[in-house]
Length: 365
Ligand code: IPM
Ligand code: MG
Image 1: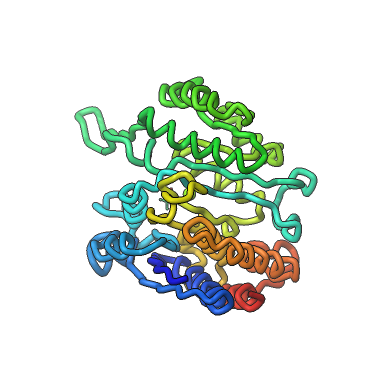
Image 2: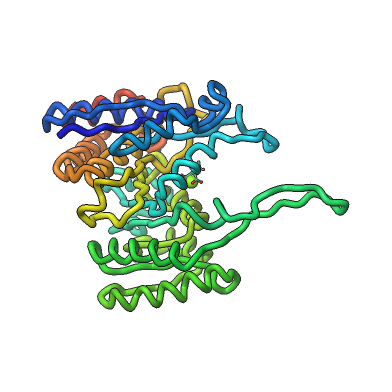
């Protein structure tokens, strides 16, 4: 199969983890006889430096022409001035919005080999296997008004948490569909005791739920969800939430896996698994971690989240199930054999660098 992939490394550790993912793609291409055409594009802080914008038109065109997008990470202290006109993060937000990537799938699982990398007790981690579905193109991230201004009584700032019925319906449908393919349990996270948008969200969740009588639907307030996530994480199957709640809960959930560096994600504009519609749309795949400026350039970043995002891309965008399985198995093997980057090394003390981890994973393919 011949496919084209837009690769946007971004800033900080983005390029470092992307390099290892490309290594893995090459190994898959050789073993399964695929031609992965790779087109690189600039995004984030380095694009601001070179082109004055975090998402140059050239990159948008590259993304639109590609069959899928593989994204690293953006941001860094150099571009963190709160008064700057443009920010690196605007780059990824604009891609998500312009491609309509409203459904962000963030699978969270515990690797037996990494049980001790998590600060949580092993008995709490047993059986953890969940999918967090984060709404990605609405809510506080995009709602208008969104601004800062000065008044005679001091400065003000506003962000707007707004959702339309159709935005809520479509994300909940994805949630129910995912639950149908898994353990048929959907936890809808909201803050309906305080927020109007959450009261609408919950009302619609109940309505959409009538179309999926086999799925057990729970509603959990986000503060309680944050607690349950580390108290009884194995109870969750699919969690669906609005944009900001999902952002926060998935950083928390990554602790179950041992590190932020472990979690992959897929951002889609259609229901996954619905054949026909899938291949025509461009989806984006990225690790959930950021650009990690504190360790950038040291060659010690964990490339697994990005490599697993690559596996998700092969499965969801190209239907390459065996290829995706092979990558995931390779990651399992590397971990089982004791290979660790610093973030998951725990007390063992011995860690390999980013390139070695990539070599080991690509090597067993
Ligand atoms: C994520 C990141 C992004 C987000 C940032 C980089 C804009 O935290 O993908 O979780 O908030 O969505
Ligand atoms: Mg985040």
